[in-house]
Amino acid sequence: MADELDDYLRGGSEISHQYKRDSAPAPPIELDRLVLKAAGSLQARTPFKPHSLAPLAFAASVLLSLALVLAMVFGPQVKKPDDKPQVVRVRIFKSEQPRATPASARERNPALWLHDIDALRRAGRGSEADAEMRRFRSAYPDYIIPISE
Image (cartoon, rainbow, N blue to C red):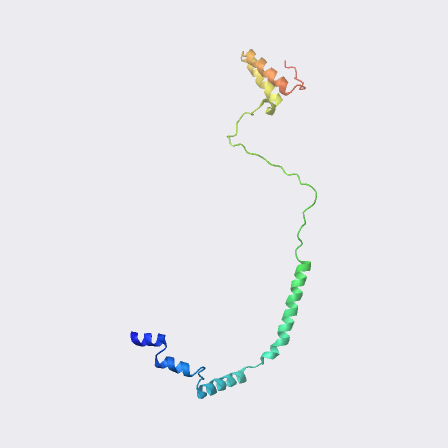
């Protein structure tokens, strides 16, 4: 079996010689007649001819083209961006944890700050109250302090 395969691959087999003699082998005439007969009977059974579909295909192409053009003209309109500059607010988050008290004296509520200063004075911590009052005055120099009774 391996010898036959090697012989065939080298072109020395009987089949290889037949292929060389017949450049284009033709199918048997009986097979041609059967195929043509089957094709003829198939054509006789089709209710319409292929050329009868041409007007339908043309109409479908026209309608699809018209639908595409209408969709492009009357489709959803894309809002164009304004040329005016836009205001963008950016909030920067710090990596440290939020604190219960403000980070600087300028972030404190002045009324609450004055209340804390009064609490220091009532607790007998006058020097701390004076230091806080100086910080308060540097943060709110124009703030009018109400007179407490």
